[in-house]
Image 1 (spheres, rainbow, N blue to C red):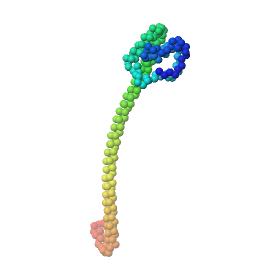
Image 2 (cartoon, one colour; image 1 turned 30 degrees about the vertical axis):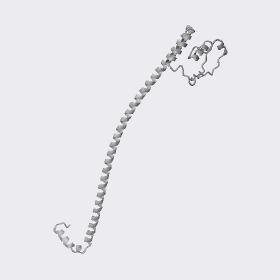
Image 3 (cartoon, helix red, strand yellow; image 1 turned 135 degrees about the vertical axis):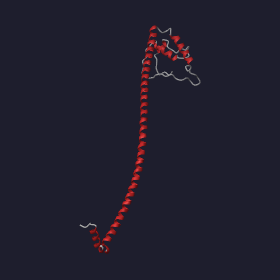
Image 4 (cartoon, rainbow, N blue to C red; image 1 turned 180 degrees about the vertical axis):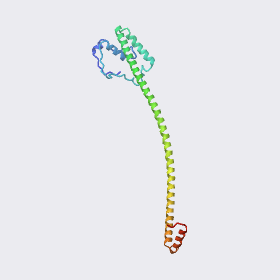
Length: 209
C-alpha cells in the first residue's frame, strides 16, 4: 500500500506497527491498530492505494485459499482484542452495508425491469412499424402498377388522337378539294348552259317554289 498520510509518533509509542507474523493484510492490521487510539476522518477521495508486488514476486492475495488464510489469521488476532461494543459496531456496520447493498440491488432490479419493459415496448413499436412499412410498400407497388397502366392508356389515347387528327386533316384536304371542284363546276360554261334544264327538272319533281 502506498501511503500519503502522516501518523503521529505517539501512535508508534503506543505500539502501532506492522505485524511481522502476518503474511498478508498487514496494512489493514496497522489501520486497525491506529483506530484503537484515534479517529479517522474521510476526505471524500482516495488517499491510499494498494500497490502491485515487486517484479519477480507473486501477490499472496491472488489465490482464494491465500485470501481465506490471511483473513483467518487477522481475525484470530483481533477476535480477543475487540470488546462486545466493538463487535456490535462491526455487526451494525455490516448490517447497514448489507441493507444498502440490498437497496441498491432492488433499485438496479427496478431499473432493469423498467429498461426491459421499455425494450419490449420498443420491440412492439418496431414490429408495428415493420407492418406499416410493408403495407406502405404494397400500396406503393399497387400505385406504381396503376400508374404504369395509366401511362400505357395515355400513350394509346395519344396515338389514337394523332391518328384522328391525321384523318381529320386528310378529310379537310378532301373537302377543300371537293369545294374547289364544285366551285369550278359552278363557274363553268356547261353549268350555265344546262341551268334551264335543271330548272325544268325541278318543276317536274315539284321542287320549285
